[in-house]
Length: 374
Image 1 (spheres, rainbow, N blue to C red):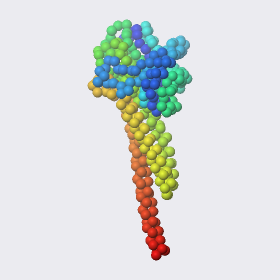
Image 2: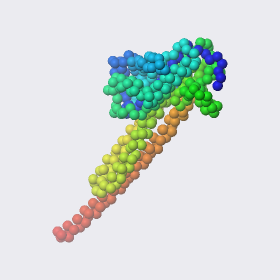
Image 3: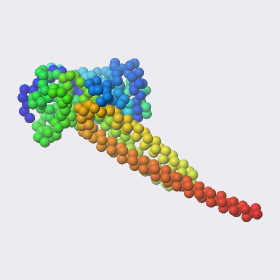
Image 4: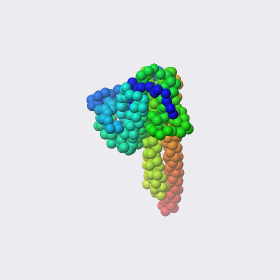
């Protein structure tokens, strides 16, 4: 799409995010203490612009400053700021931030695309692995039941805080083509795909703009606000955690079926009942743990009255298919709950039958003894 006189980016940044599930839970108070000792900066995150009664973190994550990262992009070396955010439900988010100042629009797009390509999975995995290792060295003692960081998500942010001239959102959209930036494609896109790519646009003031896709967002925030970026990160953190528990339940269901079948074959006498009871107890504990953590995930961000951030948050949940993952986890939990109830009922029935048989046997023995003694 032809553009007219694109503005120059005077102050902005491109940010690559990668999020991992690393533990069942994380003690954030311990993270603050550990981070204060080993890391350059540690702070709880708050949404500054929003009214705390309108939108707030259930448990604010802790931000930990890390050492800068040197990275080569298209033959030039850059220094990227490195920070991490730690969530109490076991997710960490690592952000590598490349400041961009005093460049024309095409160069801004080129750097954003280069960063995204260089740090994409699996090409950029060694870079991320090194930063994650340094983070875990700091916060490791705060992890409760650590897990291998096998479930991960990427997200990319292209942010402008100041152009070389003041622009409204409508003026900006008429002066630049966001499609190559958001898609990373250099070839001309179809009109249908371009419309779909730019469909989710939001503005609160006349001179700010947020355009969301499932893996990339463009943010124009002259005031320097970061609330939209924070909300997008929380939605990604929720996605990572739900994906982890979906995979956990995928592995647990076949094991559950095998254990149920083994227990049914052994359901003869008190030993079989004990095995049934142990299996039912394990399933009940699994359901309780997953239900507790998914409730914490779903309540990570409470949105009530801030309509603008609520719309962005809802759109992000839709784009990331968070509600679909929540439904998948709930369905698998329902299967396990039904299995637990069936096990409980079968065990109770068998126990009753054994007790009845024992009572009948005792009566028979008593009658026989009466005849023998009499």
